[in-house]
Length: 347
Image (cartoon, rainbow, N blue to C red; front, side, top):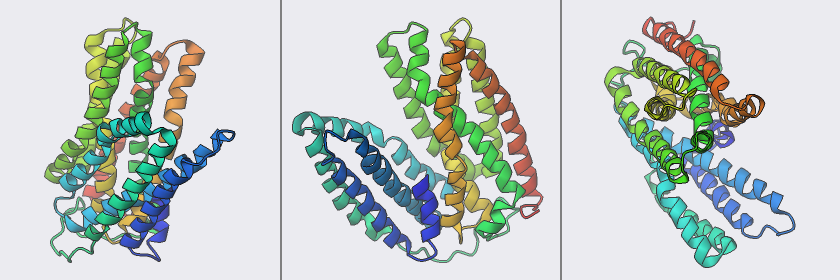
């Protein structure tokens, strides 16, 4: 999140390609520094790997989203969905590769190898970051009008505040379930194979949903897609809440399926709503601010569900609260739709 927000600040002084190059270098150095962390100071890896790699990836992430939005203004949903699908499913390829390198070369050498691979591949693809041609007939959720709203104005818009709260709810629930899914099924006495299957299924649905909801943004618009996501995540959370007391798999599995589906949709909607409603000229800064609003969900959701379990000995109380929040998300999505469709973005 810090990297995405920082790209918005850097957009005032350096080009997208230069910023992406900086992000690649910082990420590669993070892997390189991690490989030489002394065994006596293992906590340093939080700075070398957690901070450097995460920050660099955040910079590159925002740049590629910005590039896709500029090149495919009228099909940004499907284009960004494909991009985010690749990111969401990257663990399917990179995790086995990292495990193979670590088992054959040791973790220090594997970090150095990943550093080299990241530097070569990352720099090689920078040539594809190019300014997009001007397009006049850009579709917008704001009754077809092309709007360009600066970051300072956007922060004061009701349409942004409502969207930020909506995204916080959906991402928070998705993040909480992602972090505790294996433990939830373990508490119900399910075998480890089922726990791993459910986690893998959750990740897979979260990734592929980004493409599905991107297509939906192009077809019916961002605000209509938001409303649909809200209804489905509320239904999913309701099924999980009802299925918890007796551990009914017939409710829990579909419920978590719907939550994962909507969790993936929040990522695609976050990218497309900002571009569609507030314009593309200031997209790097605006999307950086939008991404920062989800920080409490990413940092606190997993901790919150764990605290509830530690205090009460179960998760049910968390999901009752989450269900109430998802009901509110339907209202926030509807209010966003009203604000945007009536052209009251700046009011």
